Length: 401
Image (tube, rainbow, N blue to C red):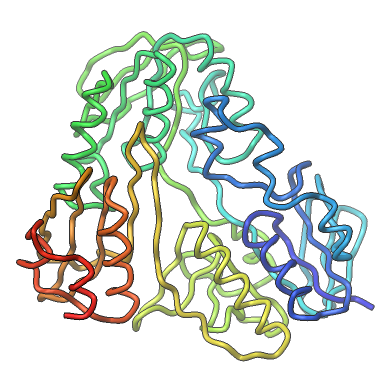
């Protein structure tokens, strides 16, 4: 009996496997992961785990015994080398594994610096897996000067950890401002002030020309001509979906592995979910890089693998922790033409509008504003921008207004 094979043992893969059993599927389930670890949480890696505030055992999504109890075969430290959609088999080196249905939850990989500008030097790190963070932890513990390349959420979270560890931190962002691709100017301004108040040097509109050093990085030359002496560098310039297996198998790609609303790829027996998958969204296509999406989409795919024919409707939400600030984001701000700021009891929020329709909110230490805005967005409702900006207006009343 071939059963269901899942390639990728991260948040999406684990959620899909468990959901299949919850739904009563009794066939074989095989979950294949490249890393030697059982499925674990990734968001804490560059924050509480790197800070030493979370033990390895707490990273695991579920006790390893649960997979055994649920009769889910974990194939860890296993490299899938090819997929044959016609024969219905995956190859792991010289071994082949047959499937009735296949799910790709292969996730994503951080973009790295080219070797031509120093990306191959020692002590140049990127954050994605447990091994990456374990490798960089000694550098954080030694202190010194770290250069962080990229002013998105990954780079800013790393800067916060480094500053809390007492390191000298310089962050370069080649765009005009940090978070320019993902947030409004008001949110960028908020986090710029936050990081500068903790001693981080932010250089916006400045890129990296190259890292210097013979074997290990010792310095950096910036696009403005400035040179820095550094002890290590951390690259946070975005991620790319892992689509190599899908492409080699002839699946359709479109900013990731293209799926229909059910999560089905261009091959009827192959499905995809999580960071690697792009799916229909509001007349276009989208690929979401978030834990909530990985879980929700994977669980819908599990239902559809068993015949539910249920369309996946994403309700995007994200979060970021920096110092003592929790940023919570609801919705997608694409196409906004107006932003209003609201001051909360202990924080603030920025509300994104397009033609007076609420699209998204960034809430900094303001969970109440986040929850209200999230409800409004999920229900397709809006609220007058003037009311959203007025701190004296009752947020709960906005839900029924």
